[in-house]
Length: 57
Image (cartoon, rainbow, N blue to C red):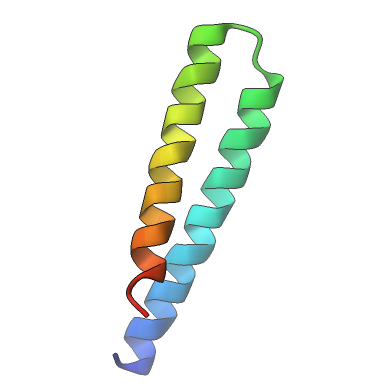
């Protein structure tokens, strides 16, 4: 993997961590259960993407 590709993957990992954190924060602020489930589902998708990127190494 080139240095440029490695930097791209590292940036993508940071983005996924940011999105996971934001989904957790938003879900904790919501009161409507259907919205909480939706945001948690989106957060789970970002967790899956994070694992995908980490498995590239």
